[in-house]
Each structure stands twice: as structure tokens, then as C-alpha cells.
Image 1 (cartoon, rainbow, N blue to C red):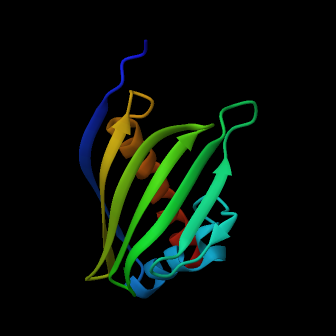
Image 2 (cartoon, helix red, strand yellow):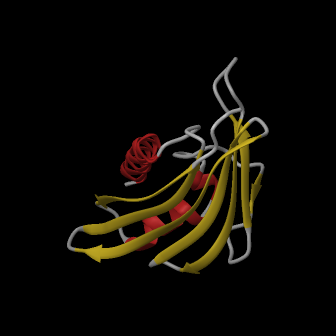
Length: 147
């Protein structure tokens, strides 16, 4: 029988972008803007209680499902969402994420905090943090192209 376990973890990733909080917020809130740096969702309802849902993955690889519920949105300041991540029919993790947008000289400091429950070694906080860094780098490139 396979050993079942949960690893709980929190990580924080920070970035400073040479864009206003309004521009950074728009990159999260507008579907077309978000698709420039994140996966294209099948459902995109950016509002408290709204859902974001996408499925996909590499060719010939596993299919991942990202299923979000937005918990709190304070325009240009804070986005809080909970989400599940599945591989095929197997739940890999459940997380709550807070994205804070802080006005600083010359732009916006983004503080991304994720608190997760990672199941049975199928995903790890280290892998998720690595992916988050890549995602926020892609956001930065998208914001630079908009400037």
C-alpha cells in the first residue's frame, strides 16, 4: 500500500516591477493581459467568489488542472485566492495564495505568499516555489513589453 502523507509549507516570493500598481493589478484582472504570462483559462471570472479554471500540460505529458476560487480582491492592492492542482484525476495540492501590490518609488513591489498542503510527494513546496518564480518572471517580461 502507498504511504499517504501531507507536507504543509509556506513560501514568499517578492518582485519589484517598473509599473504602477494599476498596471500590475490589470495583468492579473484582465483575461487577455493574464494570458500573456499565464495559461489560457477555460473559465475566467475575476471577482470575489469567481472561478478561474484551466487544464493543460506538455505534449505527451500529464494533464494538469488548476482550479481557483477568488476569496478577496482589493483593486490595485490585494488578490487572495484558494486553488487546487490536480495531475490527471489525482489531487496534488490545495493552496491559499495572497498577492500584495505595494506602491514603491518607480513601480510596484509584489509580495506573493502561498500556504499549501502538498499530498503524497506528488508535488513539493520547492517545486511550486520554483514554478512561482518562473511565473512572476514571465509577468515581469509581459509588463516590460507593455511599457
